[in-house]
Amino acid sequence: VPRPRHVAHTMAYLFESRQLLLSAALAASVALLLDRWLRRRGRGTGKDALARELARLEARAEAVREALAGLDEPPQREVRIWMDGAFDMMHYGHANAFRKGRALGTHLIVGVNDDESILRCKGAPPLMNDEERLAMVQACKFVDEVVPKVPYIMSPEYLRWAIETYRIDYVVHGDDPCIVDGRDVYESARALGKYRTIPRTEGVSTTEIVGRMLLLTRDHHRAAAPSPVGPAAGGRAREARTAGEGGEGGEG
Image 1 (cartoon, rainbow, N blue to C red):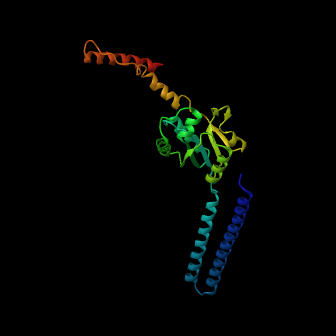
Image 2 (cartoon, rainbow, N blue to C red):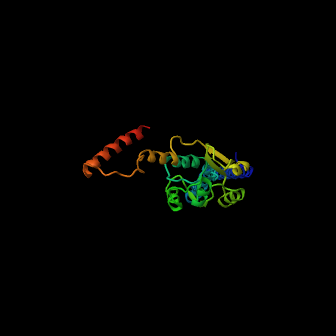
Image 3 (cartoon, rainbow, N blue to C red):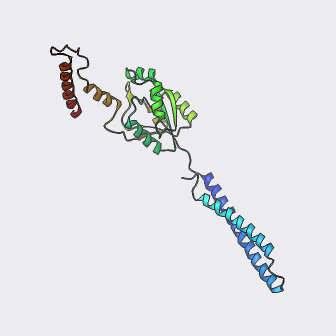
């Protein structure tokens, strides 16, 4: 909905443009009447004066046309979106979330949780460190700005600071619950009326990807026993066993 101030400015501009067009039309009519009067008096057409006046009126009319064309598309207000998370082993689910979040506004700011904050809240450190996760988020084309060392749980004070510093309009997260110690991580954003959700990308997560890797290495903890038939035969036996287990993991 256009702001009253913007509407008033637009109406005043349209009125001024209308006056300019009327002035141009009046000047053209006067020039035509003058030309006819000169013809009747037999003094020629005053071509030079009329040409100059016509050029001036055409330039003025062109300026009015350009101004009116600019009013057809009012300037788009910037809408700044905030998203945050660990983004460990960044995958297409993260990129899709950034795409959906960016579509809700015009500028996407992504806060990346620091290692200590993740360890404190999840009980385990991320697989990739701060610098690696920051580099992956920065490489995504949907991200306009990255903020490092964002706490996993933003306090009301931190959220207010982020909103003021980065001029945030909406805080966006997936529609899956984000609960730590029985509390909603985004309760402060909800209370401010700035929280929005996007559909979560199903079938992919960092935890699920790590699970796939572990399923493919189920015997990694076992000590390798020496083969009685020699290293070559033992190697072939291990390859056959690994291939068989990999097939089961791929189907499961």
